[in-house]
Image (cartoon, rainbow, N blue to C red; front, side, top):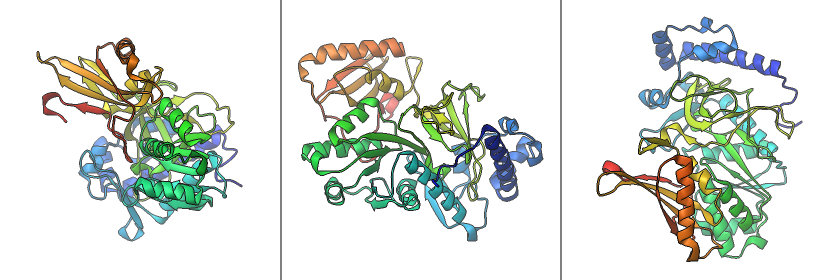
Length: 430
């Protein structure tokens, strides 16, 4: 028997979700001072939820709630029952610190093992884990799931490229787990050192940031891997492992026996129909130490309607398009970096790496410059025509004009972490 539950009908899932919601609500309102105060102000009691659809009437939880209850927000168990903490990167302020009970760790391990199973891994695989360890959830999650699944974990973390390359060759790892930026960095290192024939990678699992089809194709070409998968998760949701795309890569299957996913309009805060993009809101159904009820992730995605060709009954959401709080305004137009990414992805001769620079010109008018690398196989002879094509396609998609600079391949920086895409220099911003 595998880790992915079978025979979960729509009726069974609705029953699991309602019971999980009721348990979570009672647990929070009996044990969390933050939830007690929030629901007291809203005039809502646990008994007010009588059916699953009543979830829509419950108040949202946002990162500001977590910051305001620092350092251990949402803690809903006694200190003696907390066996671990993890935290976010803290790049936009105080870290979001989450508590874990022993049962939380077990649930996390099981759901991550489901992701490995869905990727087609076997116990004979060797899993090279090239993500951060320590306070961050990524390394701990990938290793925890690997050990629960029964494969060999190679726990590298963010070491230098020499050590990564050495271990890929020596250990003959078959699965590589990292951010998209790190996978790109290592793919180029493998290519530069002529090691493609000396490694044994079959699969790559990417998390923490969006990756374009162009980047994924390029990584495949340089490494020789058969499949690249997307994994989703947040520190607030145990960590990575809440879902993975199957071999058809037509959306990320998520574990709706452990979570309720809603998609809302970030402006009206009202639900949107399946298929329409909006902001992902998540409610946990089993989380004990730091449970979430209607947590606004600010990630932009959509629920994909219909059944997947793979036959798995678990529903799918689209790849994350960006964050509602990553949006920037340029000449009165709301723009997400992913919109630029999608346009660039359609143009031959363009590489995977780009930056968006926002500034003021001499008369004070907003100016946007897209700096994008040409494909590694292209020369600079056609840069002018390529820049014009990129600018035209961006104008048609975004309805605003921009300047385009074509850069040499590998001119933009590589990183082991998430790549920064937007640089807003207006009004002294960085």
